[in-house]
Length: 109
Image 1 (cartoon, rainbow, N blue to C red):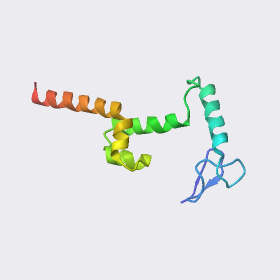
Image 2: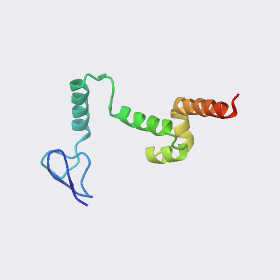
Image 3: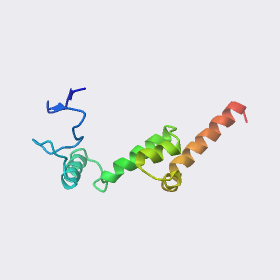
């Protein structure tokens, strides 16, 4: 399985998702953060966002999409689903409200 990236370089299964320009080495965290901040600025997005915001957004979107807590916990690397529940309670609460409203509608209550 080989594909090309936006810069026409070959991407293989053992490649890094974020790698140093012109090298087959992983991008340093500092460089990634710097580039992330440039993207935020260029697109008029809030500068207080950080790379961890991407993780939080991904988890919230999975939960909003109905992914079960054990699956979300596994993807995030939480050893216990309770950790995920503690951090993302607000997202699960929205799902509970939506499920309750849907049930009420089906029961015509």
